[in-house]
Length: 219
Ligand code: ZN
Image (cartoon, rainbow, N blue to C red; front, side, top):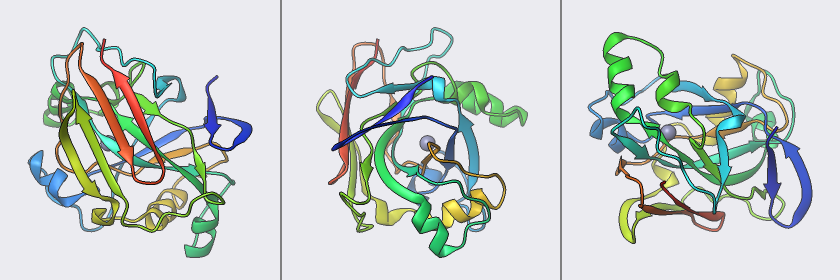
């Protein structure tokens, strides 16, 4: 079982479920040819066993020819919560980290066309890259932090979390009205525009201002 690591704390918390939001930045929805959602976010899951940490390598699955990077703000849920309101949702978000939602875009397009679930496009070993969680007691997000990703030193994604369509509290309210969130769960909040292909040998550096950064390479 995989555990979360925290900045400035020895605490270790087992990773629960990883809930991911799709199309949460208008410019990213458009770049993939999708409608910009106005009512409900798209939700999918990743298993905790997919997680690796900054410094470890992403293993390119042999059955895909289009592995994409997606850098995202990740929320750490530190309390059990169901049917959250504004206040309890805010209280349950006890920290933040930055994450990579590695995606097999060729498989995802095939599944979308057939109307099949995205599972195998989003879930594979090393498909979720994380770094240490920063507890809110150490840093509280202002809401306009820069989020960026570089491949081999060249900028690919560069935006601000203020461009998210559904902000963290709304995401937690939406999800917790449909499934209980528990201590140790993580929420990937969607990626800004600029997603693109990586191949073995590429080096990724991704960061969320004042929260953390990830270094990984594709093998
Ligand atoms: Zn994503």
